[in-house]
Length: 109
Image 1 (tube, rainbow, N blue to C red):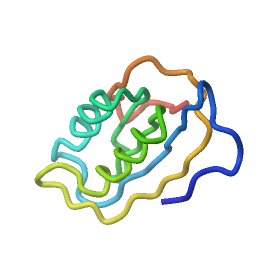
Image 2: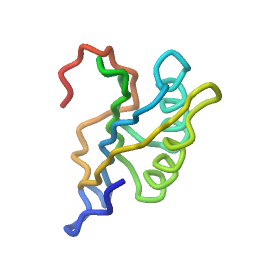
Image 3: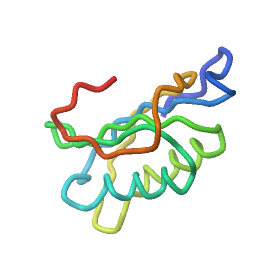
Image 4: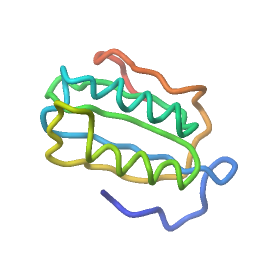
């Protein structure tokens, strides 16, 4: 996963993680796994299945919470087999309230 950005943190010192998770990550509760942990960590954003079989997500919150979620993404729930996580960190936009599971046909942000 890409390192932290060189610039200033975003809104209120928050960070943004944009990630795509590859492997056997659909049909195994992966989105619910991400949502549960994101809510526990106080993160906002969304997670969705992608047509090619990956899972895409955007999460915003404290650096510590983003670090913990990033580590969990590589594990996934029981039944998942994560091949790799491609991601980048940016300053947070502050544009999310809560953390949701989106339909695969969403347009993103």
